[in-house]
Length: 323
Image (cartoon, rainbow, N blue to C red; front, side, top):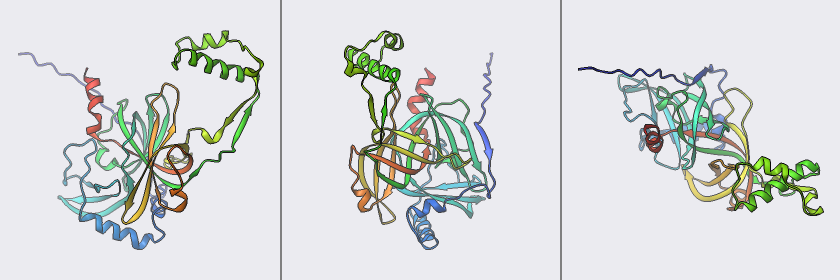
């Protein structure tokens, strides 16, 4: 009998380790939800223990024998808590942070992880299928830390907490007067419209051949910046998950976090041609201002972007890889 072995060189994504001094911590994230951190957060952590669950992430066999244990709650807005374990029993508290479940996501590869091994904090640099770079705090790093692989596509769920969120300034416009830019804009729109909304393979050749039929077609183009989708990540190492975004509200619903009223906004913050829209569920404390934001409004927000990678969401991806 002949036995064939297939060797696979499995490598983890690039990992950059930060010290405790280099790690920002979660004080600002808790301040989104309370001004009385020293009293409220310990109470919330104690309350969650009574109904805590063990999120599996990519690991189907979560064990209390691991050196660290991740606890969560089955609520849209919840806390995740990390405990150090010894011989199957909690030894000490390591970390805790507020989270939101995000039902939307993108297929991405993990290019890099910036990690504090003491606190189990990790910020992932992700590359989406269309080439966009996204940075997000990893809600499930404790559960997934030994399982991530280089150059492997994962379906990533995204969510965020909003430090600030408001309706975009509708009077922010720019006037494009460059004749070549105007010609390109008009040509592109005309060609796509004539092609039943589809971008033809030879779009660039057609644009070169396109000529205006009227003077009006070459008039300056006014672009409303308040109606754009945009995402800008942070520029400090390990804090790139602190982002600014602008986008359109696709959905809105009420929720709670430990008795506090929260509004969940489903916002598309990137919407490019021939790419899957980047939709994020953003949680904001319910106020008169956030209540005034309606579906279809364009908003601007400063957010803390989060990612979560679950095994059950990889089924279709695994099937496609197997085939």
